[in-house]
Image (tube, rainbow over all chains, first blue to last red; front, side, top):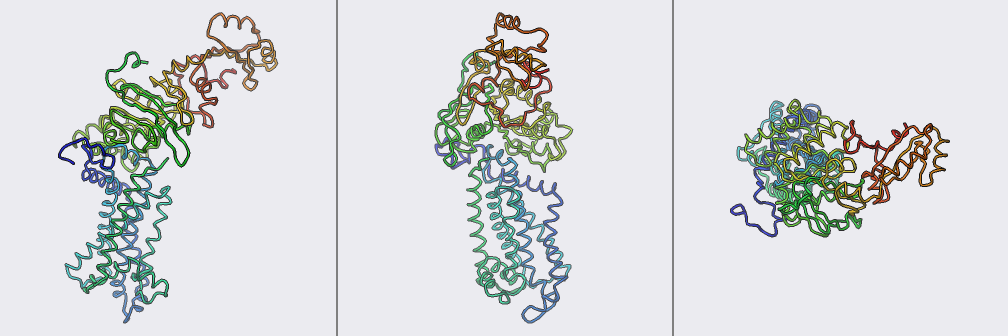
Length: 277
Length: 343
């Protein structure tokens, strides 16, 4: 389609024409997102700091008791190893939540209408936000890990296992962020958009993230066993502690890939559909 | 008033035929036809809810029409939205600036999206900041801007890509009188440069000031179209407003002049007037010198036209718009009918 500017008749569904450069436009939009993060420092720092509060609370404050409750017993250091995957997911989720809010704010402010009347790749506005969220998430995860190491965290995982961890966290970030993009696009206003995805923050609590799944009450255990968070957490936990994850790994990657694909398509559809002001 | 003298050699900038749109069984537009020659200003005038924004949203490819065809700069809006988007600029009703970025960064963002080379983008941003009097505020966050500054930045962002045709949806709604006049001047400059402007407004004076042609939209249909002079010509004549300070004198005058209507609340007598000197002289002969405190000859304005065409006032249920500090030259003859006439 880029070789010649052949005047195709049915171009409504294929807006990639002379003017649109999806990569270049996404890059422009990504820079916009990053610039906003720099400008809105308090929010950015809050997003990075939030998982640290969880880390401090659960490891430093409750850690000794929680660790003693682990199968076979243990201490604060054991509990830190146990909950680190859940903290990583909370990090992803809280940044994704913010993405929903920012997207809804864009829609509310009319700037998206401006973008939509310009000859730019339609998905660029969304991908710019998503990649911005990915970059912020990576940054926040590095901070979380650094603080965990300060708290005495040591990993038995190999380099290869950590590469796998990185890959899974990135894919999960894409999955959760595209999901919140869709929520942000379908929210009637920014306030709703910041509230609707709230339950995402609780998903790690209703999984094997903070306590072993078999210690949960029956109904919650049933939910925990089948929800995506559990397989992701189990996989991350296995890999970071030098074990193998087995089917959990396939399930985790499968879930994340499926959610990413569905929510990407859903978001694109929502974006193309115009709200009547 | 400038461009209607000869038929333009090129195709119209906007050509709309039979345009219709409904939202959930609610008909918003019913068969709109209009043509905008290049280099002219077209104003779509109508009250809130008349369908003005829907027309703009269809023409700017934000939504699709249910019926009819629309061609913008030679591109069909339904079949070739990409072609339309390349050549137009849109300033919507809602502020479309990124408030977290500075004015300059907003302009640079637009330049990048128009794929201007880096240096040219920077130069274009500077040029527009200068032109829109935003240099001093250029490196400040846009959230600190006043309403008028945001509007100017909004319009500057629209112009980054040097569009041939710009859409302005209620460009001065909510602006103070000074900002409003500044924006009018900017629009006039653009037209001098050859840009075609399609604007919507609920203010009759704005259409009168700026537009070569005015389309009056009411309840989803165009009820009239023409130059503002043509539209005013559709009314038989104006009226003479005679002001009193004593209700008794007013009632007496109303009784003696049969075609007159008394407006007790503002102490004026309204007498239909065909515009001739003789009828004015005749009326003056019948007025009591001592009782009359003021007299105004009121030529029909778009307000009257709107009222006559639609049976209701254009500004119904709207808070009084900010009237320009200095009256517009074309309208200096009459004061806005209210309290002023009573003085």
